[in-house]
Image 1: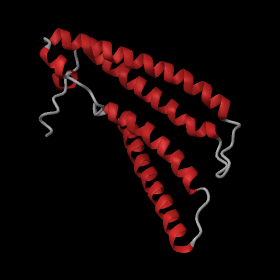
Image 2: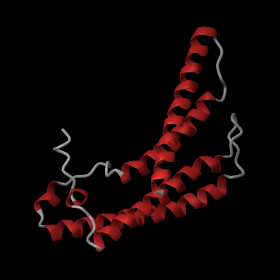
Image 3: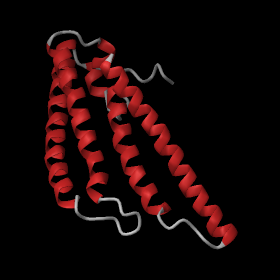
Length: 166
């Protein structure tokens, strides 16, 4: 129940971010070409929103197993080989998430007092999106590893067949 609430919140946040970006950028284009003026903070804020949109979207795509993967080799392996490949892949990705979290924590700390020149937003707030992404993906990967080790992972999740979607 709680995870569903988090996912729905992230989905609605992505919708709001995209909508706000469209309004800011389109409004700025109309003002620049139609009235020779513009919204000064539009470009900066839309760039920050784009960063957050990418990071939140990456977490949701991992949840839906939608990231790009090449399963040509793993499809040919027996079930045990597929499980080993999935385990190694998840552990390596989890290691990258740990490194990303450490780096994000350092960057956030260095940039909380740096203020964006036009919008006045602390740059550390922008980099918090990286921390949210790495922690969210790390938790999903831990769940994936747990399901794999306890035998609760489905064959479709183990080695997805995207040919059916076409």
